[in-house]
Length: 191
Image 1: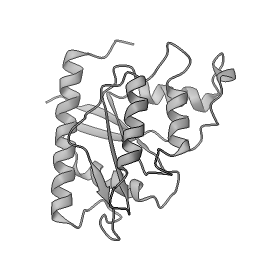
Image 2: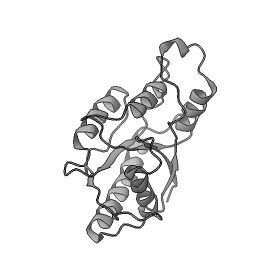
Image 3: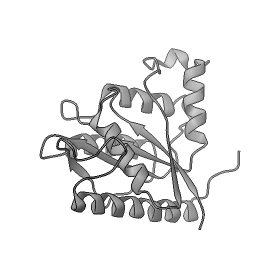
């Protein structure tokens, strides 16, 4: 079995983010064929096309980190019925300058947690629209809107609800299968 590296983005900048907790569970439940590594977004300045001629070092490192992974996973909260500004800013950096979009042909999936019953459904739809424009093949099913309750995921990534644990495990298995399918049809270009 091939090993694929998945770069994941946590949409929240908060240290105690429930989506950061969710990421720990996803890492723990991922099948052996996936290796997850965080691609941090917190240090990126606000994107402006004035940078296109000469990206700052943090943005160059960010784009390099995306180039080095086989697929991307977005783990995001919902802010005001959309994605957090920091996540949109990161996507803007990754997609620029024109013709150097880091997400082109890069398999992606979206998941998120919220205390609310809709569990980031609206933010995910907004994010999927952006990823479509960025030409990123997206895993459309299963969709994963996690209603996060106190104690659902422990500090070490253990999920305390059996049904949620099984759902997240299956989600990661499906994501692995999706990455394999996409990269079979659209192999990564040699660098």
